[in-house]
Amino acid sequence: MALLKIEHVAKRYGRGRQRKGVLEDINLSIGKGDLVGLVGESGSGKSTLARLIMRLETMDEGEISFSRSGNFYDSCQIVFQNATAALNPTWTVRASLLEPLRLMKGDREGYIKEMLSLVSLSDVHLDRLPSELSGGERQRVNLLRSILVKPELLICDEIVSSLDRLIQKEIVELLKRLNEEMGMAILFISHDLKVVNYLCDRVYVMKDGRIVEDSVKQDGTFVFSHPYAQRLFE
Ligand SMILES: Nc1ncnc2c1ncn2[C@@H]1O[C@H](COP(=O)(O)OP(=O)(O)OP(=O)(O)O)[C@@H](O)[C@H]1O
Image 1 (cartoon, rainbow, N blue to C red):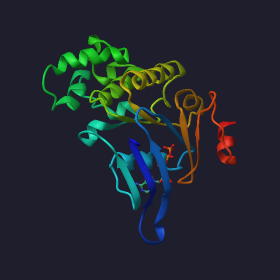
Image 2 (image 1 turned 135 degrees about the horizontal axis):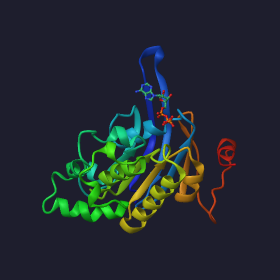
Image 3 (image 1 turned 180 degrees about the vertical axis):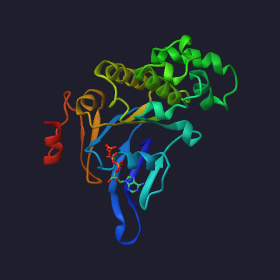
Image 4 (image 1 turned 60 degrees about the vertical axis):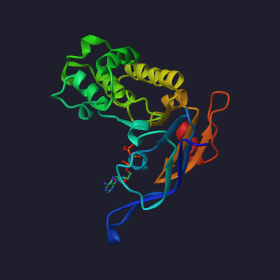
């Protein structure tokens, strides 16, 4: 059974004559532990779809079902591109990491220390403010904050786009590990096709609010028949 199933979803913004369709007839499915890419040019609707999945906005048509065991936001988490904006500048790393665990019983601090190594950070980072971290460290704290609750699905919305290649690689390797070790499914939204090619096993291609094609990796590559998808991956 699919972990996430999106069927015939449509989203429109604005009123009256100004009303504009941003998503039309979106169908997408993610299984447990899948590594799925979502690509398409700027403005094609990728982030809007992510916000619908996260229930941050409502759709106009269609259905999104998510099969989960507990609380929705413990099972489904999102990480955004801008780690600086996502972290409270006046909170230490410790405070930012404790916040998603406020309902956890037991040794929260001990659990955080254990998880820090997963993202190659250590105790020394706990007392720092976001401004005292590098861009890559900030994104790792941001990522850690989302995975502390061990979600079944992690949505990454352009999370490596503003980072340099070396740090990008670090984050992508980390996502691979999280997928392997925790069985976490990942929806990786990106316009960096190289990274998507490397990380994902399946990819959906969006254009003007529609999914024009999806492809499953075979022998290490994706094969497309739609001219737009072919051009994108050329
Ligand atoms: N709240 C809103 N009100 C009106 N239009 C919106 C709103 N949010 C998004 N849009 C429009 O919806 C379209 C899709 O935007 P979206 O951010 O989902 O695209 P995207 O594929 O994620 O782009 P990018 O890669 O640049 O982030 C754009 O034309 C955008 O202007």
